[in-house]
Length: 111
Image 1 (cartoon, rainbow, N blue to C red):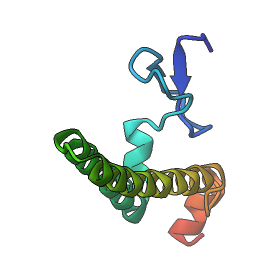
Image 2: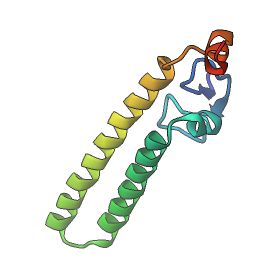
Image 3: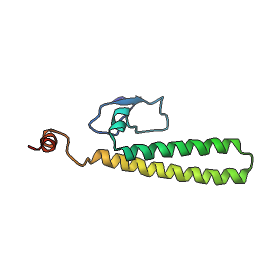
Image 4: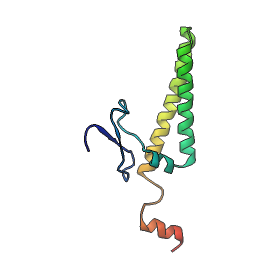
């Protein structure tokens, strides 16, 4: 793997992203793997990002430093929640409930 690419967190996925697109990140999840996650994970991840963006916009608009600090605290709580969700996403990808392969397919079919 070259140094200018970031791999997907899914070890079975070979997709990568450009380092320039995500300069502060050392891991990503590609769109295909993200859509394969359970709906609850995806919904919580999106909700956290919406809240973080909302509070960051509010912080930029306020002129009161005390109010801005309270808003930063709220925003940091959402960031912590996002990071905890990211750990759960990685854990679910690294250790799936069922093994990928022929055995899982045969079990699903009922053979």
